[in-house]
Amino acid sequence: MSIHSLPAPRFGRELRTTVVLAGPLVAGHVATGLIGLVDSVIAGRHGTDTLAAVSVGTAMFWLPLMIPMGTLMALPPTVSQLDGSGRRGEIGAVFRQALWLALILGVLLFGLMTLGVHALAPMGIAEEIRPGAAAFLGGIRWGVPALTLYYCMRYLSDGLHWTLPTMVFGFGGLVLLIPLGFLLTFGGWGVPEMGAGGLGWASAIVLWAQAIAFFIYLWRSRRFAPLRLFERFDLPGRRHISELLRVGLPIGITVAMEGGLFVATSLLIGRLGPIEAAAHQIAINLSGLCFMVPFAVAEATTVRVGHALGSGLGREGVRRTALAGLAVVLATQTCSAILLFGGGSALAGLYTNDAAVATLAASLLLLAAAYQFPDGIQVLSAGALRGLKDTRVPMVLAAISYWAVGMVLGAWLGLGLGWGPRGMWIGLIAGLTVAAVLLGTRFLRRSARIDPQPGLPPAHDSAAVAG
Image (cartoon, rainbow, N blue to C red; front, side):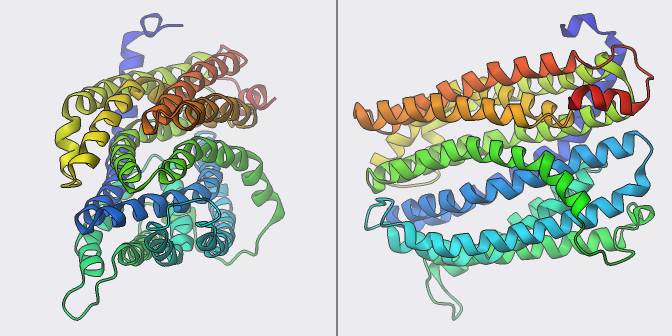
C-alpha cells in the first residue's frame, strides 16, 4: 500500500493531526535531549576527564532506566484505545495502578544504581574516569523514582492527545538545569566545586521538580477533572498491573535492547581512553538529540494507531495513521542527516576545546548522519506496533537486529580489528538497518489482519490484532 492509494483529503487530515499531536512531543523530547547536551557542554568545559566520566555515568544511568520507561509505554495505547472506544470512565483506575507500577519500578532501579557504582572497575572503565562516573551516578540515582512517576503522568496525558505538558515541563527542566548544573559543577556562591557529581545532583533535583509540577497540573487541571484521577486511593491491583506488564514489559525490553546497543557501545569505547570516550559522548549526544524527533513522532503514531483501532476504523484507517507518521519521519530525518553531515566540525567545537576530541567526534557524526533514515523508520515501525499492542515478537526482532547484528559486528570491527569508535558506529548502522526492515515488515503483516471494513465493534479489531 502506498500513500498515493489513499484519498488525499483523508490522508492530509491524518497528517495534520499527527503533526499537531507530535509537535509538543518533539519539543519536549528535544528539551530532554538538550538536558543531555547541557550536561555534556558543562562537563566538557570542566575538563576532558569530567566529560568522559559523565559519558560513562550517563550510559549506566539510562541503560537500566530504559526497561521501566519502556514498560510504562503500555499506558498510551491502553488509554488511547479506551478513549477511542468510549470507555473514558475506566482510565482513572488504570492510571492509579500505573502510578503504583511506576513507583515500584523507580525504587527497584534506585537500588540497582546504588549497586552499579561498584561495577565500574570490573567493567574495565579507565581508572581516571571511575571517580567522576561514580560521583555522577551517586547523585542522579536519587531522581530515578521521580522520573518513573513523571513518565507515567506524561504517558497518560499523551495517550489522551494532550501533549502540550510534555513540552512545557521538558523546557522547564532545561531552564532550571542550566544555572543549577553550572553552579554545582564549578562551584560558587558558597557552593563547593563538585565536578561530575554536581551534574548528577543537579539532574536529580530537576527530575523531582518536573514530577511534582506535573502532579500538581493533573490534580488541578479542568481538562483531566472528568477522569477523576485522584478521587480515591487504590491499593495495587493484580489485574491492571498484570495487563500493563503483559503489554509493557516487552516494550521495556525492546527499548532497553535498542538503547542498550548505544549504551554498551559507550561503555566499550570507555575502555579505550578519555579522548575516545569524550568524542563518542559528543557524537552520541548530538545524534541522540536528533533521535528525539522521530521518537516523538513514533509516540504520536502509537496514540493515533491505538485510537484508530479502538474507534473501529478498520485496516485502512490504522495504516493511514502509520503512513502519516512515516511521512513526517522521512522529512525530519532528511533535515537531521543534512545537519550532521554538513555541520559536524562546528557542532563538536561547541563541546570541547580539545582538538583531538573534536576531530574524532566530527568523524563519528558523519556516520551518525548515515543511520538517520533506518533509525527513523525502525522507531516509527515500533511505535505503530505498540499502538496495536503487538509487543512480544517485536522484542525478539529487536534482539536479533540490535545485538546479534549491531553489537556483534561493532565489537568485531571496533575492538577485534582495531577500528576503534568508528568500527563500533558501523555496527550501529547495520543493527538499525536490519531493525527497520524487520519491524516495518511486521507492521504490514499485523495490520493486514485487521478487518478492512471500518465501523465494526472495536473489540473485533482488537482481537484480530492481539492474536
